[in-house]
Image (cartoon, rainbow, N blue to C red):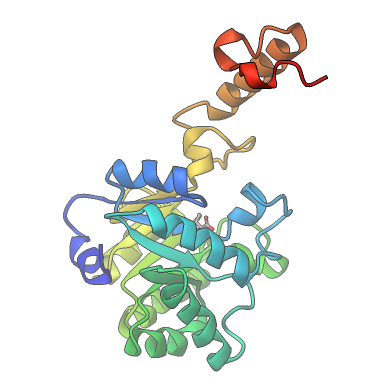
Length: 268
Ligand code: KIV
């Protein structure tokens, strides 16, 4: 799927987006018909053992994106640009985003957005790097804003609507809106033509995104606006316990898991 398809999809049936950080998960997400796969910087706290997304590197996102892109047939693959890989120096940002498309085979990048990403979005779009914007709660700014709901007073809400319009004008092909009041989600969706993809932004957005770890029930913690649709953590725990018990009891490996060769019978 290309940026153009996503842009045109808003308004029809809801757009679906999920994160994935590895090939087997991406294969399942893609074959389920999900429109966009985000290689989120949430890989930091969900898979890499960091306490936040801030330490995630360009190399880590590039390597995960390449794994996801290798097996994805239909969905758009979006690389989530890590903290400080963009927003300071334009040439560096272009190089980092370019690596995602040239070396990791992503179809687009996502930038946690603000006033500082409007012109960068315009430049990247002009040179052929599709940009998904991200407003509301932007976890890379957690040291400044905390990880709280955003757009809860009139001034902040107006700023989010204004930035959404400016990023649309700059060429963003869609906009993630995270953890804002549902009525603000509806207002932004009304104000712009590109699809809004909500995460804790209410049902009026053009689409929804969650982290796959929450959806499958792998995460220990689930955000209040998120939902688990499975219990992979419980299943993994059960399988690992069963394996340990089987090895300790001598039940595994059984005859059928072993093979014998006459030639190596009497070596000692
Ligand atoms: O990194 C991430 O997973 C995200 C989504 C939750 C939007 O940015």
